[in-house]
Image (tube, helix red, strand yellow):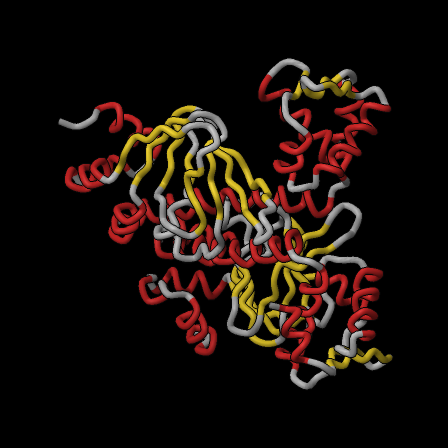
Length: 224
Length: 224
């Protein structure tokens, strides 16, 4: 008997689902598995083909990594979203290595890359879906690139802090300077210096508990 | 009568050409035009839909531009290559602005974006071709991003100089420090400082005429 929950999920997430034959649907289902990842786990590691990752709960972070261990976050993935760049055997044209970590405890479904690749050889809609999903992230990556390369640090940090409180709620960001630097592709010293500047200006209050936004209006002005 | 040269060219460059009906081929041809651009001309400017650019001779440079006028070169296009990111109406998922300049006097064929977009609605192969061509450049862009964000400046400059002499021939790079900085997404001061360092090390000789590579072996060592 088919896993009806999985079928409903695939129907919702893959627009070509109803066009597949019953055999193709079965193959698709059999190549897929539920996996839970604990916070901090590395899920995808460079150029191997982990498969397509569908996020059910939690969140994933996709990043690039330098030889010296420096990370740059490209984007995050949340429930209902899909990671296509981890399926390198589906995307022949992608030759760069990305890394994916679970940023929270996360429940995922992983669809096998080989099964999808062979399906997309027969089914144009599956191929088009994979290409469009991957290409949509190209724009996210360009945004990050422009943010890092073109924007001044104060603006970037203001945007980061505003994003965090809008995501988590409240007025306090519970991250260390080290973590913020990592997420922003910057150095801890740079983040600490800028936060001290913000604190001196009365925009934030710094404590062991985190970074409390005390003047959100000025922070917004910096971010625009 | 059809332009036989154009037909041969399309047959060579678009793998789905023979699958198109005669009417579709005619529409494709009628939406295309030969255009010559003088060196330095801006061909594509941000988010408009210029169309698909096929390069016949010369070379084009594709770059992003900050609000402050800073440029970062993403890649160059040479004869036989095709620019797909300039056809924004073909690629719905691409939301970032790129700019394209003629870097030499260049002869191009521009295929109208609207005509291609409506063709790709009916013809999966045309849609897949556009997506794959665009996605292939994602890897180039990631390479540039990693080079800029992760690599040290000496390494980057060494690679740039070696690329230039392998492209142009000879042992001298005839570019100003300002031009090199622009191409590398760096500042003139940084390039000048590094070139002086290279010169002090006997790797290059600087003169008004350009940058002469005097120790290509050491330059190669720096680049790896």
